Length: 124
Image 1 (tube, helix red, strand yellow):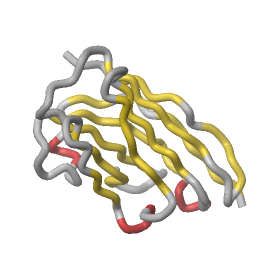
Image 2: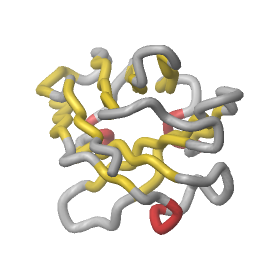
Image 3: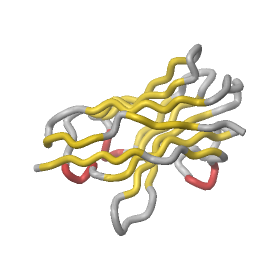
Image 4: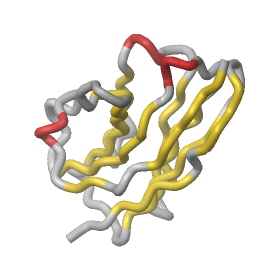
């Protein structure tokens, strides 16, 4: 059972930056993928970005393209989300997730493992 632990959330002013980290408890296989999702109050959980563990193929939701960057440290089993030019509408609990598949990564149901979430709050 892979355990995922996020860190790096906090309060930041609009236009600022934060970097989220997600540490996996064990070495991840070549067919593994990871993603970031977020959930704002009263809204459904939504896809933010994903990365395949072996090849590093990236995907982003349109609202964060050009502002957020997903990456991973293959040797350390850590995934990152660098968030720049943050907006108040980015405020949400951010979750990292792991999938035993590299398909349908924009869909939450694809993922087998989830972290506990970390709060990101962007003030005006």
